[in-house]
Image 1 (cartoon, rainbow, N blue to C red):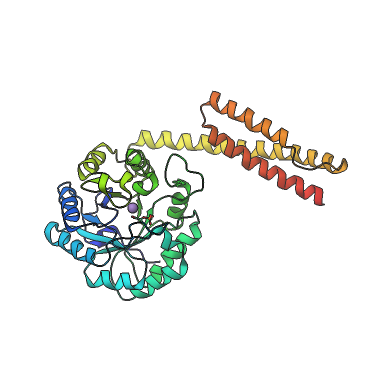
Image 2: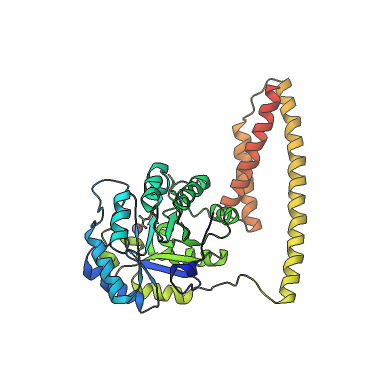
Length: 357
Ligand code: PEP
Ligand code: MN
């Protein structure tokens, strides 16, 4: 897959690359006022949703094509590049015709190969940056598939947006970050710039900073942050939008980490610590192997005595004990529970094989 660097987008590729603007275009005044504030911070790319894919009907579905004129005004007045979401061929044709500089594909669209292909077909022959948000569900293959479809249309100015994954149980954030999916995307496509969308992960303005800092700690390339001149009256995603001034304050606070260091001492100590980790990882695997051989013994006993695998009381005991242990060791309960659930699942699989043998 041919992927051009961010430089090719016609911007100064600052770290992080920042894209900001309202969730939705609402009026010419709202767009221009927000854009002026962002421009004064040196932000180079202005975002605004024109067509809004809403989860439930009867919510604000965007102003439609008229918003493209306002985007054009923003570009003329501020010189910022403009970006909007496209979900159908019609959106692509209209946005290209009106000179929108950058297009993005939303999370609900990325989850639908037919829709992504329609957008890809409409993009044939265009030379425009296209950013692909992760699908709503944490399916890396589906995300990669969407990127491949757009690349297949000849688009080489590509990037991904990490906006988190929806879940039935609401946690601290509106969408679960599942950072591991992003780390794996980077491993699979090392040249693809990855931009974090802390606004849609957070769902609330109070978490934007902590998520942005985490993205910077991981070394992601940019941030797309929703901003509004008056967030409290925003017609969509009001709770998660910042004012341009707040965006500026947030960016000021962010610590940007270096990719590498020339410091020999640092490199040496990092190498030593990594070797320690490799040894410990090996110890963990050896212990797991020992544990599973005990599980096999139990499986054989259960088979001989015709006993079912699941002993619910026992499982409760293990979880409760490990949660207590988590506290004394400074781990989160969630982490320890996840680890033990995975171990328990593997134990069930092993015993099941024995019972079936
Ligand atoms: C948006 O960027 O406003 C949007 C609709 O985001 P997502 O596709 O991530 O839900
Ligand atoms: Mn939004």
